Length: 368
Image (cartoon, rainbow, N blue to C red; front, side, top):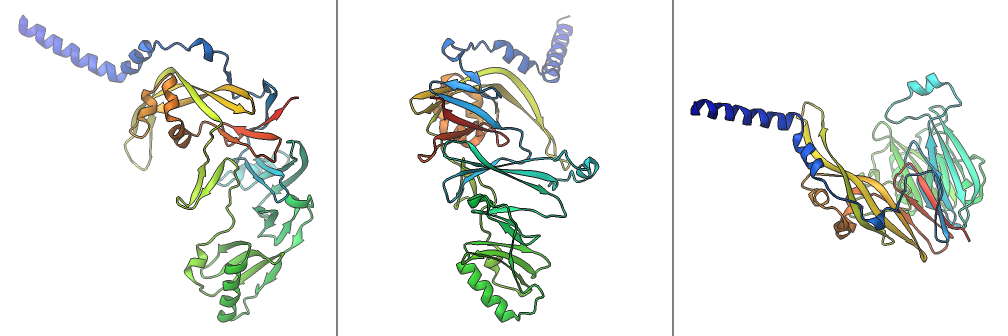
């Protein structure tokens, strides 16, 4: 009898262990034991992901652009004006054609360029409808350049949308190797903007700006290897980030005006990650919740919350285990690993930029 009871007990333990893993009872029990209650002082913090204007003190934050297909770009031109670039999948042309183009690139897009004055008012707007027939337009400082159609526009600086021709050099490849190398070396050393595209190596098309003029040089000679590796300018314009020469990539700036003050756990979930390629899937627990933050603008404070999720992983374990006001101890690491918010201010501008996503952009301005 005793032996039978031991066997039955062992079976029940095994069944319990099986059910524990099959039905995620560990997650269920931890959610039941999550007794955290949001302190009263944080209950007035509003959800930042809203289309309604948010008024705080003498300031108002308004969502200006939302659901951009590609990440929103923004930069300051030579006249101190902010340029904002958004994109969308077109709805005013053959939808079958657009659908068939739904590749990784989505070449059929409408790109909107907005020019803001020092008060954040839109003073000009330009649209480029990209197709495979009319090529692509790229930003080089104050210029919009179409390397495929061989033209440039000066709209960024002066509002002129006229397509001006680029000066073409050696398109018929009649120059000898010595002359090609001589001109290319001078371009590499002196050009203010420089971009070259590989064709059938060593053939290349180099677009560059020097002495106030745009040129496009065609070459078929093998030039110094380091020249092929240099690209100017940076292809992604973002006032929230800066280019790191050490990492060779865009990295987030720090945001001293924003302080994370509280993390409220709401639900523990178990997510499965599938790498693909025949690799075994992995499962990890994640704490879903709200990150409460404060943004100081002049003498006013925007108090907001943003949804966030921390994974139980060796690189993010500290966030997973942290709750409440302890999250404030990890401000720098939180901004680096999770990028929950972005902020930009400039002494020459009477407004600020803010966002929690690359696809949307808020403007903060004084109301009085």
